[in-house]
Length: 287
Image (cartoon, rainbow, N blue to C red; front, side, top):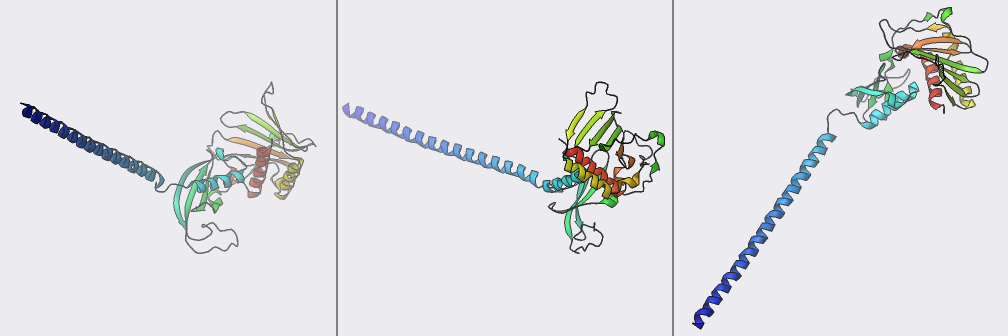
């Protein structure tokens, strides 16, 4: 009887030991499977994420940010306005036939090597400008010929001429029209004050007074002389037939008055464009 009990115990213990071993093996196997599944899932996630990033970075014909910044910065400087007022509305990859990006300056020597780059179209909502650039934006050129057209001036009727400037005033701009239909007068004084008011504002609530240095005022006066602003005396450059919602600007110096509109600004004589740019820079720098 004792031998039978001893045999039973030994057999039962063996079974329990075997069960424990099998359980351990199964646990290890399950853990291994879970680790493999987790590793595979992690690998798949990384691969998918990487592919998404790659897809975003290799979009064909995407304008590089340095090129966009170079174009917008150049045009903002030329026009004397802020870059936030400009928007790139179109662009295409181009291969220019020479080192001048097919826009040579007079008497400029251009290498004949092909130059990969971009054609970029910028707008302020009313006018468009076309730029030629290289691949990186280190070379940008405005295609001024694309914006040139004949715009014949007419004489401003005497009844429409504004009053002459006071002796202590250097320059005056009157802007009117546009969507709001309001009229503003901005006056630059010799002492550097730049005062802007809205005509018809009974409470004078929109008056602003800013300043530039006397040196900047004097530089502006010299620039007006160099650009021969006086030769445009009492001339008006009208808007194209059928145009609507444009702003008319009337500029007056001590030598005379000229009138133009924002739609036709790119078609004005170069000297007049330069004078307008200098005036816009005064307005931007005023604090």
